[in-house]
Length: 384
Image (tube, rainbow, N blue to C red; front, side):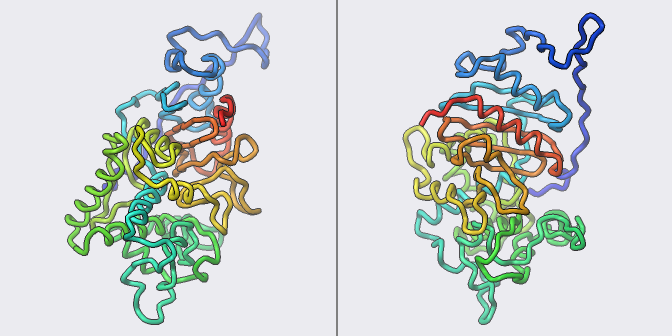
């Protein structure tokens, strides 16, 4: 169940590496000391990149204060883990909060119901509160919700001259007035634009999709029934087929999966989800999610080239919008599930790579860390 303690993060101290000196001089270009085989043992012998080279690219994530605090890093190549490193106090069994990476999982879950014929992309979204005659929200389609272009008045973060941090809809919905019934809060917001007219990234939108998933599965309004039915669906269609045994979705008091931001999983489980999408919805030869849906997720939406079907793409965004990946340092086929404080699952099909970074880097200074992830991936050759 939804726990407030999930949202209280403590600052974690970490040491800075000392500057190298030689014969009383400070040489900024001095080569770093050679690391021992034991120090490089977190990198597999099967890595196509030399261990020392790959380590020099990964280490700043953990050692450079500009990167914030990295708690877990994992990279898979051709389906095998070739590097896995954890910060002090964390290991392969630690579950990390997803934050907005959960949105991409919600996008995949919607895909199962579309492929089952239970939902239709360009039909009006089946939200009962919007079905009253004359309600403009009744024109919002499922596609527009998935593309973050619903036109609903959802404010994700505080705005200069506008809503403060605690007035923004995300905080109100997750922690304050809307926390008991998050979908009810999100669905009650009025329109601020025509459906499909503009892009506005919104955690509340993903919670509406989570509610649609549950309403499609059951007509019950009992919170326990809603939660149990949704959990069976998530486990049966996604977690068990992918072997994501450590993954735990969180629910609000009304039994709605908090599919915009709150899911707990190990770094390895997050990597399994990335690999699932890299393989176009297949695992071990079995096609679980249709290739057409994964292709839809990876196709640019009309209002933002860098956003697809609830997933980020390695493409340049329109002027005035913050770049989120590294379009100048990698193929545009790269896509990613991204979350608050630098949670990242980055997938490069053309390099057969999936990389996971989990930790705590403030969103307004995330660029150095994100760029370093691009540098790491750029070490690997293109294979298609």
